[in-house]
Image 1 (cartoon, rainbow, N blue to C red):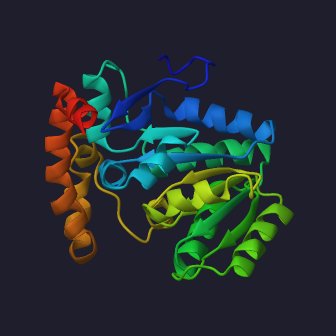
Image 2 (cartoon, rainbow, N blue to C red):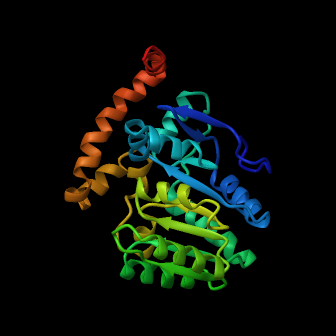
Length: 263
């Protein structure tokens, strides 16, 4: 799909039973803009190996991802899978970079945005960084929720504040799978386009370093992050990555689909 086209990103490829869309930064930003202008409530998932393995392990979570309005290939392994499945020009749509594209569009058109997630210090840093980068950006709402589940009354208050502040684009940084489940559960309650951006809050706030471009390009971002946060990320990467390789191979050979049909 040509990045300069005005066609919305409607095509997707199934990887491990999960829909990943053929799209680009420009197309996603264009689609977010059109949804905002139409006053629609939507949610976008930004998928990497972690997301796909969570979906593989949980039918309920896979449904959350497959019901999203758009799912982008954030991780290079997903980009490679799309290329191997017939999308030769597919490029990465990386969460932090996509967030900057959408924020730039929002600043230009004065669209109110909000941030939900992260801890208080990170959120304050993020707000300051984005206001400095985009002076015209209208950050109408930011909230760092507690780690516990909100009560119904607290959740209703969050929804009310987001609505009352006129937020039309909401960035959700709760981490996978919490943020995807949260967005799916709040679609319709919040009249905004929601993007689950994971660690983008930490990256863009300058709280956590991003992997060098060359490591990202060859699919070694996970190693960079593992070396920086071994205690938190060891199980995720050392457990999920080998399984993904085997499942991806089975998917490409058609064995994965055959096995599911025989169950």
